[in-house]
Structures are given as structure tokens and as C-alpha cells.
Length: 37
Image (tube, rainbow, N blue to C red):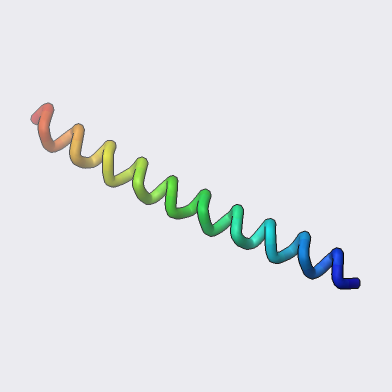
């Protein structure tokens, strides 16, 4: 039971990191587009 909770916690953390990375990528793309216009 504890192992399952640990796996869920790790997956949740990984998903959180991924979403932050996606947000950063979108921001960088937006900044690049602004510069090229």
C-alpha cells in the first residue's frame, strides 16, 4: 500500500514538473514570436 502511494506521489510530481516545463516552453515560443514580428 505504501509503495503505491509513493508511486502516485512520484507520478504527480513528474506531471507537475512536466506542466511547468510546457508552460516555460510556451512562454519562450511566445517571446521568440514577439521578437521575430
